Amino acid sequence: MKLSEIVETLDATLLIGEDKLDQEITKCGASDLMSDVLAAICEGCILLTGLTTVQVIRTASVAGVGAVAFVRGKKPPPEVVEMAGIQGLPLISSPYSMFVSCGRLHACNLTGLNGQR
Amino acid sequence: MSKFKKSFHIKGRDFIRAGEASINVQNLLKSMDFDSRLIRRVAICGYESEMNVVMHGGDGSLSLEVDTDKMILEISDDGPGIEDIELAMKAGYSTANDDHREMGFGAGMGLPNMKKNSDQIHIQSNTDRGTVVRMIFFLLEGGKTD
Image 1 (cartoon, each protein chain N blue to C red):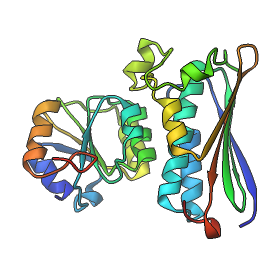
Image 2: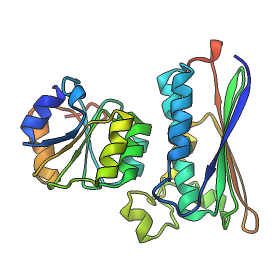
Image 3: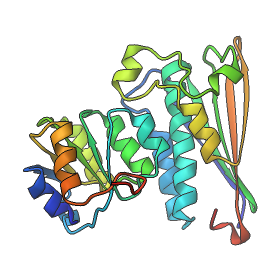
Image 4: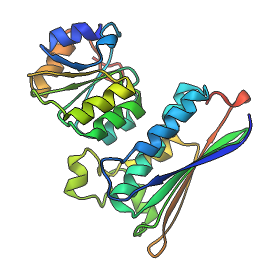
């Protein structure tokens, strides 16, 4: 599904990356543990997380993550959003919990990072 | 491809800048048109080891050497060293503190992940002189893919 559809599904706010809304995303990973993200194959996925630090942006960039969704209505500080903009990484913020966000995306046929449903 | 070597400084305990060296390496390799999977492996290894330096080490450096048949990523620090390297290589073993875990690190997966993503890993550590982690990535024909 397109990132724009993910924004709708999660009732999310786009924080940065308007030019990436047509990007196709088929996989989803959800973790607050950046080591898990680095250990998985998450190229082009959407990463759901409750962390809002600069390390989320660097981890996502290094791992090739396609977009980051902050759950529970969290919003990172402006310098983190700016860094994502420089890296070309779209960020969205959803009011839903991690569990509900995962459920909504699973219902839209997104798979886990290993392709499982 | 001609050889080159580039080094980046890593400042211990600076969690705001932690990872900058690896992002620089990633951007450098992208500009040189290397295979994206290889770039990802090198960047992950660099980032994991850079975080280890920032979390556990003192100051350090990350250097990337590109040769005709391989890349060498070397991370060194003047930190406290690793007491038991074999133990540190085990997934889940960690000496990180709660601050590290709050940033999403310190789960004891860094060194195993570096081993998984590199073709060779060599670790030299001494509790008096710090740690040197050297990782090798072999290049296939043309040096553009993994």
